[in-house]
Figure (tube, rainbow, N blue to C red):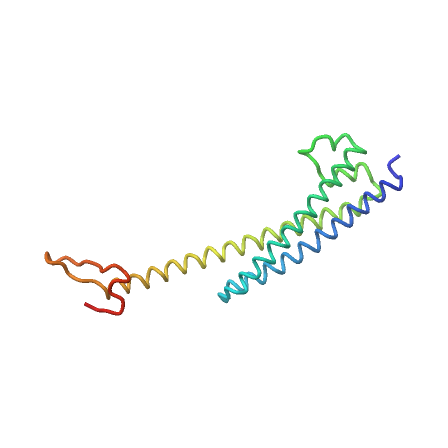
Length: 174
């Protein structure tokens, strides 16, 4: 019978894992928002510390996600033939097996879907900012070295311009 105490405990455990995933998602989004601000302000120390925080939170999130998938798979395997196909495990399939938990399952689904979407958006925003910062840095370095090479060049015997290797003519104009 599917309304036994063990099943309710399993469903409650699944609910607890959804709550952990929700909290982890919100913490990750907060760290990513801080990363975005640190990238904009070019605060390298803060960026480095936030990378460590992001890594730890991501690990925690993935562990909760594995636990959620394990519990979901076990429930579907125990009470439904739909759980046998491990490539097609879907949270909403639980509604067919446990209709009395339908509202709760819908809530879990919408919470997890919304958080996943927001995490992807924040992740893309961080990546785009980092790519922009790298391009700007490359342009700046090119401009600096172009100026440096312009000041540190000479003409060889045949009248052609020749750059002096960086470091050879530091602070010296020829």
